[in-house]
Length: 258
Image (cartoon, rainbow, N blue to C red; front, side, top):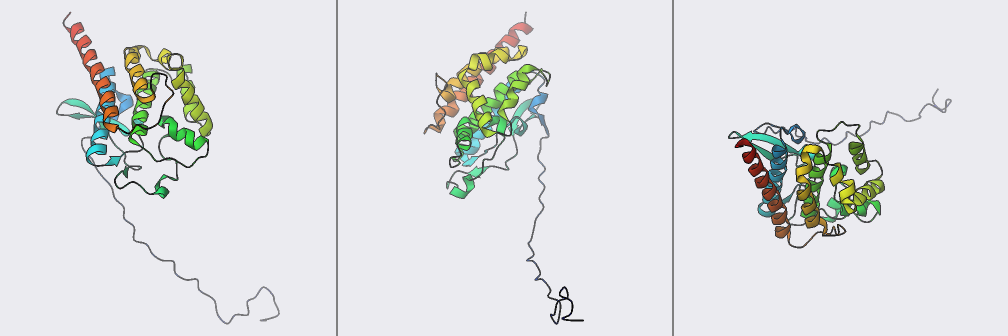
């Protein structure tokens, strides 16, 4: 029958495909303590504010002392944990973290990584224009902390279908250009698009929000390039949080003693 049927091979034997190369793989699981809860679960506005402040302090220490950049700041990567009876904020999830010394290679910056809703404007602009993806910086992460803060001030204590919450959905659509434009307009028209939408109990943080915007974007809200001096930007932002925390504590103590 061989040679009579074109669908039958005339080979003398069956060719066996080569065995694929085996790879050694490792499964690692990391258990950390203390156990934390989400930032969204904040029981008070003080917990919310302290949680973000503490995460920024941890970020600075990692960046300055260990030369590590987190690279994916979001509300899901900040948790609240009880340490020695006090609630503290902790920074988690280092899937996208990278060493800043030596600088990462060009290939490490080919992909736009991070959480879209909290991504820095400069990175969104670069991606929207289809330019070469820019390297992540400390400023981009600090800007992301700012978005975590203002998104919380707007969305916490509100229904998911409220107009204020729905407006922020334009920050994380499937279109990067839309995300960039929506966030840029919000920062430029800060009072109308952001401050006027703060939830009632978070209105006490409007002054802090305005101060953080000025630190990150300048008085006109139109500059979002990374400054050379990382120390000054960290100091200004942390000081702004600390001053607001102390002011809030003073008001709470005054109410308790009246």
